[in-house]
Length: 143
Image 1 (cartoon, one colour):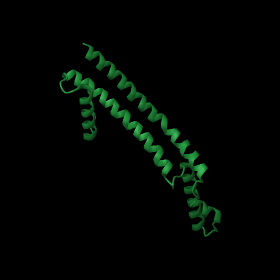
Image 2: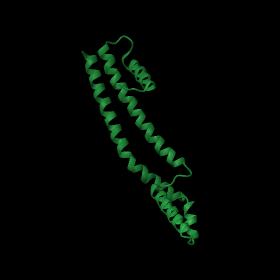
Image 3: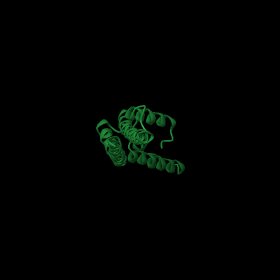
Image 4: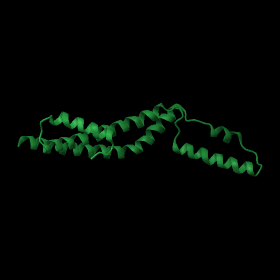
């Protein structure tokens, strides 16, 4: 059962559309299972779309690897400051550098591609649950 009240209402409304108003409690339960799987499926697809679109539209997007390099450079600069050493200008410039457009796109796609298998697994599970729920519903209607 979905604990989020908004999602619970969405599941209930979709289940009513599937089964109708005068269904038996057993058929209502089977319709609820279909609706839960469908809502989960929609949520994972929205999440995938949002993940990709947010990254692509973020003008300040930076790769995790580049961010780590900037952090290490900042730490190196701090150590040099503490020792009153000269700081190379290219290191200071690197701190505010951003990925150029072709590199940015490639980096976004590469980093998102690492996250997609988990979303794909969740989507496949929701599809499987929906398919099984629909089969059970169809079998229940036939009797």
